[in-house]
Amino acid sequence: MRHATIIGTGSYAPDNTMTNEDLTKLVDTNDEWIITRTGIKERRIATGELTSDLAYEAAVRAIQNAGLTAAEIDLIICATITPDSFMPSVACIVQDRLKAMKAAAFDLTAACTGMIYGMVTAAQFIETGMYQNILVIGAETLSKILNWEDRSTCVLFGDGAGAVVVSSTEKESGMLSSNLLSDGSKQALLSCPAVPLNNPFTKAETTNFAPSITMQGQEVFKFAVRSITENVKAVLKKANHTVEDIKYIIPHQANLRIIEQAAKFLDVPVDKFYLNLEHYGNTSAASIGIALDELVQNKQIQHGDKLILVGFGGGMTSGAVLLEWD
Ligand code: COA
Figure 1: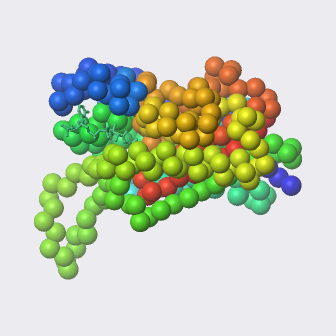
Figure 2: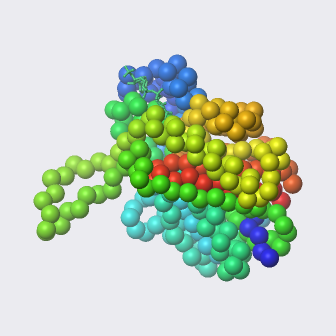
């Protein structure tokens, strides 16, 4: 039986750091409010780089850390809600820049759960024997879909990219279980419109259309806490593990208070959750990959460690994977 395992990670974020203090020049907010409500101190904001540029840099690092060349990649999946264009996909742009000549490529939309959906999708191609090496990227320039006059959202998000190479192994390790959920009935909690219908049969009145994220913060908060708890429990049960078997839970990096609540519900110390949101804010599909890469680069994960990656976000979507590190 083939199993899907992560053999390389990479991440990248724009150099430009925007602090909470910087935000006070744009909206009526302050460092203390942002830190106490979210835990975020700063975020990276692109000054010219596109989502595909961030995705490419993270991909190069992940492939190098996997000890592969781009020519060995069979499939590229890019999770994003902020592609450069409707077409081509970010995955195709990255495929071209990498010269990953044999790779198929597509984008996937599952908002902040994108990395989890991407990894689980990759695992299906591997377990069926169709592909050997799959590059999964989560990349976002959320800064282009923020309303920079709305203090309730613009302080929360940042830009960045994370990537993993998922490969086939005969060992009983790697992805031990997974869980994916969606609830479209809650779509209004967190949304961002695309271009409106505009053709000879419609009377579109939108000339200066600029899509931006809207959010019902407190409802999203409750959804997030419930989703983390439910998905973590589900992957533990499916893999016949207990939370004590897990070294780190790597959550989507949205908000420290969400994680504190979820830790309480799961009855685990909050430091079992790996967090770096204070430096990046919420980078949507990128956040889990960036956090995982940071742990790997800092050598905080050893062979045999068990990890849970868990995401939640727009759609609404949520999901988790339980991994044994090779
Ligand atoms: N700075 C200062 N004040 C702010 C502010 C900001 N950036 N944003 C909102 N406020 C104000 C509000 O206007 C409100 O003022 P009022 O009481 O005078 O009306 C007050 O702070 C409280 O607002 P509220 O929305 O009730 O705060 P909250 O405690 O729910 O915290 C969030 C807001 C967004 C931090 C919180 O709801 C949250 O984290 N939700 C989840 C968001 C998330 O993670 N989304 C992505 C998921 S993938």
